Amino acid sequence: MIESQSHVNKDEEDKFSFPYTKPNWVVVMRKLRWVRDGHGLWDLDISTPSTLNGVARPVPSDPIPSVLGLSRGIRLSRPKQVDFFQRFMFMPFIPSYSTHTPHPGNNGFSLQRVFSFSLDRWFGTVLGQFNLQKLASSIKKNGFRHQSPWFQSIARHLSDKSLYAIDFCSEFFLTPDDSLLLSLESYGDDDYKTPRKKAVFHHKFPHHNLTLEAASPGLFVDKDGTFWDVPLTMAIDLASVASSDSGPSYHICINHNAGPPKKFGSHQNGAMVASLQPGLSATTAFSFRNSIDIWRSGAPKLKMVQPYDIFLSNPHISATGIIGSVMTACFRDNSVRVPPGDGLNGSCCKSFGLGVRRGNCAILADSFATVSLSAQHGTFQKMFLDLTRFQALLDFPSGSTFFSGAARLARDVYNSRAPNLEAIQEICPNTTLSFQQQLVGPFSFRVDSGVELDFKKGYNDRFLKVKDPVFAVEYALQVLGSAKAIAWYSPRQQEFMIELRFFET
Image (tube, rainbow, N blue to C red; front, top):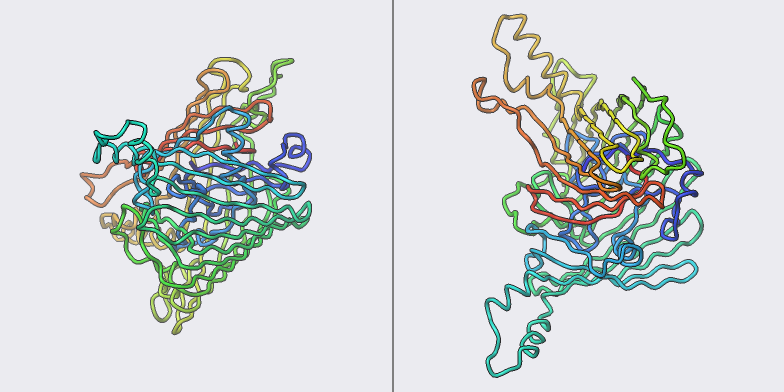
């Protein structure tokens, strides 16, 4: 789900930390693509039950800044989330469901359990996954052997290695500001014998976060839900850390892909992804963010009653605007994202967007902007209906596309012509709406969905189109100040997952 990330200062963080949150900045997984990470608008990992560690990287797309694929900060790993559910929420197994996975033998309903080991500066886990739906299908297909006791028949079915997947993960806390995570993910399915290996190093500077990551193969998912494996992907990411709700920030990311991308899973109709082709890309982005309070309640909260979530205890109406620019240099095969020669996204908009390609080298530059509105009623302290929240996010990912469409519309109006439908589509922002309502106590219901105008069929057939809705039930962990367990379901992707999240609003 699209989440706006609240900035968490050091005092707040220490107050609500627990043994698993040793890194000073905790950013947990989201389901949908775009979030506000501190100060800017960046692409974060996409939560998905299709992989054992519960995450896939979004495919870098043009126009950017979604090419900044590593901009996601320190996050609580999936094995640690499962360990938390087992230890503190008394859930012996964590369920998940997916029908679109990069491992065809692991589709359906699965159960996860983790075994953890810890020392002073080391935390190790063995995460196992059992495919319950595949077991039921195997029993239904092959049945029981009449000459064997029923428990021997069950044991025979359970011995099928394709029912299992396992992940070995070790996290080393080298210093208070450095961590190194190593993971090895293996599936018993004979159709997929290549293990997934990943190494992630994090370092916290006083005002920056540095992330180095290598994965073989690296798992990506595009906007159509198609999964892609890149044989080897490496990235270096440096991001400034916001010190307030308003002000500038910048970001630098270097990505290297080796080997051609391959499709996995149920979706096999995706087109070639230019940004995943072998090669090197370097991206830098700068943005400025400003937030204003249109209204904020001054009424006192209930005395001696702790809110279920301290970050959701202030009724308000506020708006936030972000504007920025981004430039990417591409080398080798991934430069095919830019047509040969000099390309501009609109001759009247040369100052807003640029694409230049010479041989196997290309440069992309563009501007972007986003406007969001947030409104909340209630302090999330009472037992019933004390929290109602609404958020709207208007995203303009390409300034050149927007101004090109605006210029075409202006020409049509000036020449007394009917407005061009394609131009109208270009100036319409990517809109995401979110609604959350407390049900009872710490439980609340939430729905996030994209909304877009569809003009492809002509004026008489235009209508609002709902895009990728996600439904969720949240359980606020009051004792941790601002943490929640979330069970979400995506009808489009046919995925269900339970996650643990911290310091989100």
